[in-house]
Length: 284
Image (cartoon, rainbow, N blue to C red; front, side, top):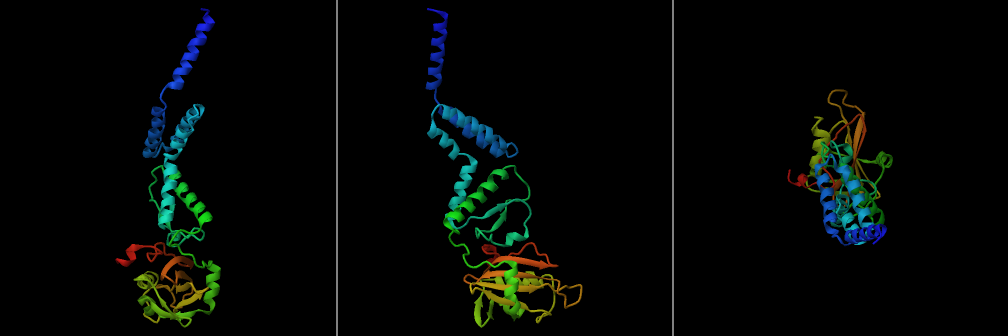
């Protein structure tokens, strides 16, 4: 037999062996490798080359189903599936990293979801989890609308809220604290403990004026469903008629819970606890 033919036969045989060798161990190795580097956090970026190598190998072998299986079983895909499940349950939230900030007391204007922090210390996996969660949530909202139970009423901007407050009623702090009061001739009922939390945090905690205070709380409606309250910033250390700032709170009239805080002027309060959906407010 000529040498060339023997080499050709050996090459064909090696190709046949490679084609017939089981694929599942390699698929399993890719999946385990992805989750291993993901768990380590700091080297989670290695998921990209591991996945690309696995997909290239499978597609060259025309194993499309197994290639899809690898994509489904990667951490980003499972995070997207988890976010989708939370969206349909009505519990999805926009994720961030770092200290709690003022926007964590508000609902996002477009998705109508809360902002929450995953913590202050990065694990190395946030580059996967945070964008995947937030992008999935934004796409679902754009296609299907806000998730079940989300606030769906009007959402005035700061300028629109300030304009509405120009002809607002004045309320006593003690009335707002009870959660029952009248605005524009209409009865208002806040959810359990919301009024007490608002007055305690935005007035009593920092400022110690008796009721009536130098400036009352202003209140009005925006398109009837949105209640707007404005708490003045009265300085303990300066003149009692200080006009340096205010906190504007937007409240869903139907459920009586705040969904947005605007902090204006010389005023900073980073951790409002009267939130749109916060079980701790009812157990305080």
